[in-house]
Image (tube, rainbow, N blue to C red; front, side, top):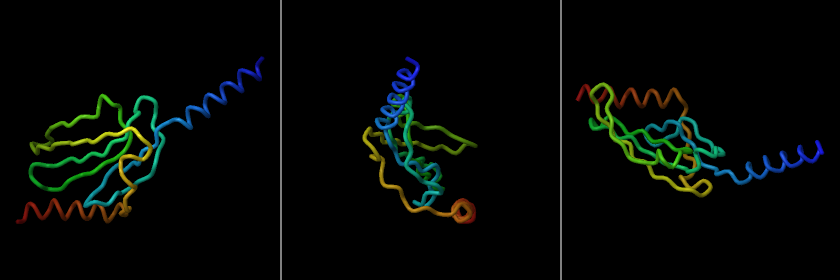
Length: 125
């Protein structure tokens, strides 16, 4: 009986792993290049893929992201940080790797340099 329970648990785990949604992730993207990207299996709670863009009102730079998301969080929103307003636009989908191909990776130091130059140039123009 114990072996039967373990076998059922193993099959259930395999079934869940096979049927989970796979999405491309990109935690931070600057100037169109992902700092770190990879495909991941989404959890049962985050069962949709998304592509998102945060646009700043000061036109400093756009930040792109991809990953898994809960359907309830798949919405556009506007917020501000340090009196700079930004809008987050998300596009969601529910098929494997539907949120775009994994993009080219940019090394972290190069991404940080690019972000600094973009911000710095706004203050000295």
